[in-house]
Length: 215
Image 1 (tube, rainbow, N blue to C red):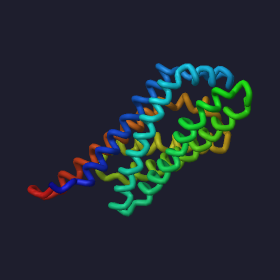
Image 2: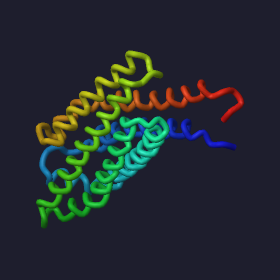
Image 3: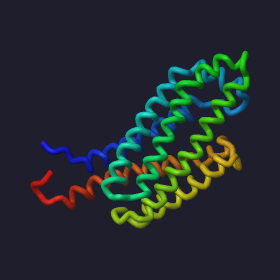
């Protein structure tokens, strides 16, 4: 049986895109991260490490799924926007390596080495801002060039991507803080759901263009 690589890539894109809204909701409403002092953040991180590390591991898997699927579309369609999205997610994986590897040690040694946790936290924020700027810039062009989406989805996806890219760039240059970007959370949730729908359309578009009887 021949594997339909395009359908597999589209499925990975949809599943990975759906995983993010789920983990974001868990992070915000279940974990409820402290936004005050580093001392409170580290204490909460130590107390709830099993839960938060599980969320970040799931997000790491989602990032890899998005990287693999976007790499397929980049190479199959010779599309620079998808290459940009792939590169963004490769960079994003390093953010989770930083958080999963350094956060617990930095949190546990906060009393003795108080500057360590802010350092690893700022590193994660820097990677977050840069990688999401690349990702959302790529998504802007993917939506604008799409011929398989309805106009309102196409333009909604493009507009949210532009707003998100500008916010991520502002975070990268420290014009905004991570806390300032929280107000844009609902828009990002919508974008990931639109991205999941895009994956379904990419798979369906391939099926409709494949002659009957062929895999």
